Length: 494
Image (cartoon, rainbow, N blue to C red; front, side, top):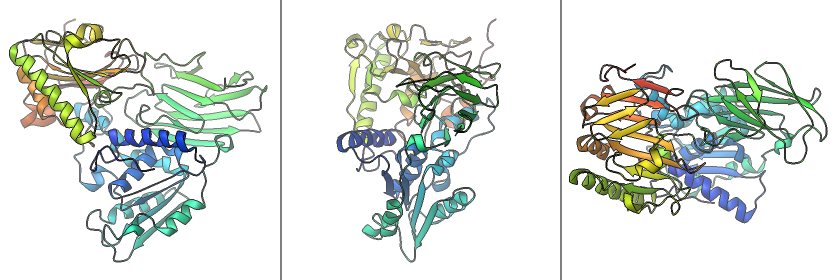
């Protein structure tokens, strides 16, 4: 199968490029019914990067991968800027976490799922062979099954052999993905369950700290009928208890806590859900799946995630002439940009034409604040982020008498368990026009759940960002992780 990455230059197989792969992959598997043990991933150049990225993001799908002339990440290849990565609640660290999905090496332990054949030309002047050398050095520390071939004298493109290299195909032929029930050990890491949530019989549903690595190392011990599981940064998770014989009870041990005895399960009722208490960190067995109104693998936030799921752009018409003019033109511009870059057609409608039933379960992008967009009340009445002309509220923080603020945020659509609402708004035209300069249809750029800035950001960068953060798993500000630029914000009233 050969997905297009949306357009020839697409999204580097990230963001919508990765979604394109997932959609084509799912359709192809359904249509052609291939042997699930013999699915392989390979690509050249940008496709080589896609092989590294998709292979690490969706490791459960493949028996082996083969990156050819691939680059590892934006940091290794083009020297992308790095922000504070200390994990502290600072605006730079929040911005770094927002782009964490592009950090291929953060997911590199997932390469243990399969064999890897790395191919590169010695004289490659487009993607230097140092990209392959770095990955060989990295894998040498822990990976038992990889090979590297560097073709002497070859450049970036050296004919069809660099895409259909016989030794790579032989490497693939010798490897098969084990069935889930044959896998007694699972090691899996994700930075965003909405992009990558499951491996074999383990599912990571939600995180304690958004966009930080979440890990599970799980073993099934047949002799003692016990699942022994070690986790990191996981709030809710599930296991599929497919190993014990029907009618037999077994134990689950999570992070060394007291064993939980599970009575015999049968039929399809093998999925067990667990939740870790936010304060005590004690795990408990749930009697049902966590509520879909909370964050989870089905919907986990991040502003750019709103631009999917057959989104519809809704621009405000109830504002001033300048406000309405900006909203209409910005919505049209974004739609044309997504068509050009992402090969997608977007419905663009005025607020008075939005009908919740007609556009049921679709993501909605609102342009404009509450005083100018008539769809705001039905979609965002309960949102802790509220924007009006001259006033912005984020949780308990109120900012008055400013007409130059831009706010981007994402919320769950209240009438849907899957859809989201993305918002491009501000406290006035000068603030909203700042969105004209923000490239969100570009790979390697990430936005948190909520971001507030002034036009000074064009000269001062991150220092002019007022608020950046992630909502909690209940979509609240209070249980989320937010960074506040107190030098630019008024005091919070008690």
